Length: 322
Image (tube, rainbow, N blue to C red; front, side, top):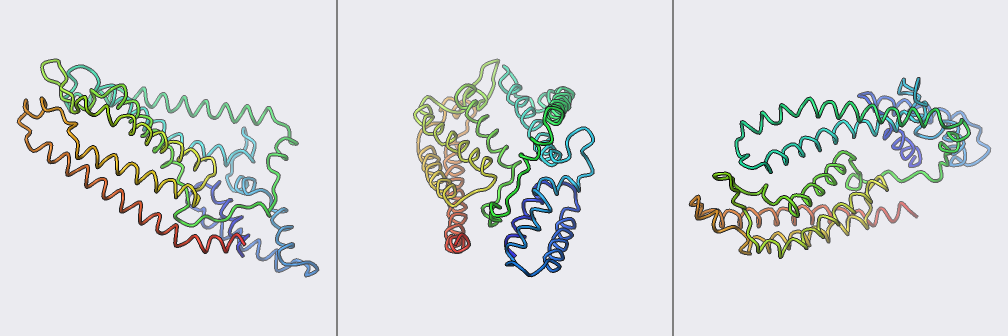
């Protein structure tokens, strides 16, 4: 039944480990057995609602399989592990990216071996920051566990089967790690393009020869708008924990907008001619144009295919709501 699938989908979101599928199948069997054994005095749908309420909130059910909950309340452990998984990926990635930017913005920093050494030297600090972040996260959840009463937790875990979200189609599902990387990547690119354009350049005799000329500033406002919109779309996906047809439509419009900007950049004179002349890089303008146009075409094709799938599935989604 659709409601069982929706319930189990929510449970699976909070589970961790390799045996998630086994747990879901076990729960499915238990629910179906309970449904089969229940008295046939009311409709099947009503009986299922009663059974799911007895099982409890998906978060609570997942917590029972976590084997945790000594210092953090059992019902909060699935959220803790979900946040932790994101944290251990996003924090080191963001710090390594920051370390990379820091190196290449230093004067005369163009040696790859020097970059690797700089990265190795930064690893202890990155590891320390990750452990500190994990410790802070644990203290936050520990404090919430100690500072809340059973009544607060019960309200937090109030569950109505009728309000279960639909299981999203594959193209509407959200991967949290990807979403956080999108936000970090867009934010870093905003910072570099607006404050550290010297990253895109070559150092020679202590001086940096920028890759782009002053004409690039004409496009900067449009690029900034595109990146801000990308962040807002991703934040909305995180808030809803899924994509929707509406956000898919906005994403497609954003793809058209971004591809237009990329093609305009490709056909404009934004390369620093001094860089081309100094290093005899006569092929660079042609290569630059070809790469950007190729990227724009690929982005358009991928965007059209993705949005096409959403359009084809839209009638079925409407029927499901009915």
